[in-house]
Length: 326
Ligand code: AMP
Image (cartoon, rainbow, N blue to C red; front, top):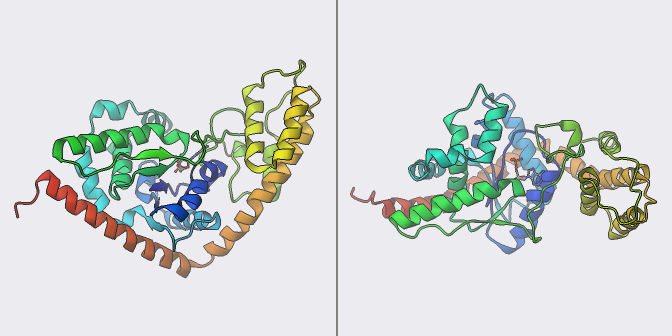
């Protein structure tokens, strides 16, 4: 089970941190993937763009290979049972631990005029989204590690107090480490909202991709063989590893090691490999976005599957909590 907020264009971080795993997992597991529209209201209360953003997230995931016939692909707001579980879990979440959450502190800093209770209890709603399907594997990027730990805490508290209902959800990635796709300016991660020139979006035109990659921070190159890479250079190599062939990566690694690297050539190669990676996805997204009937059918089908699983969980929860005296 996993979700993505419809708060803007998806980027390479979403792809490598999340969607790439969804596409593999749908072949092996019973999967629930969700557009987290309610979560987006914690920071984006204006809903004028919500519908088109929801459509975009659906189309972008499908263009990346998510198959709505294999996985349940649905909107968070279409599954009412989640709100009920959220209420129960709120009773098991403590104000102090919520206030200490890194993402809460970050978002409170970004939106000082709107530090609402929904923002504070964001990890509780996220836990409800996961636990409503009694999911055990949650494909997310590294930025979500702390939220996952909180979801485990809430699940364990519930089980301890009311009896075993929930498995412990674990962050999941096919590689050993959770992925963090760095931004192109050498600081932080690619993200939907912060520093758009340092983030590569799946909707970026070929020209825009080239422009952004060529602006990535570099320096005059190493002067001693085998020198350690500064962070911003490590980041460029990390991006190269994601989209270029092993041969290309190997060539630039050895150029770096023997101090003959030309960052201009490296960035040109990276830009072309990015264009070849993102271009076909962008074209597919545009075709899917134009087919509203198809997107509606996807949402209906996904919601039906997600509701069935949620209803079964809530029956167990009500029974366990002791709301069975009627
Ligand atoms: P969000 O864009 O915050 O709704 O996140 C959706 C998913 O993308 C989550 O699983 C995140 O962990 C993942 N994600 C977002 N940004 C990055 C990034 N720069 N690197 C890796 N994963 C990311």
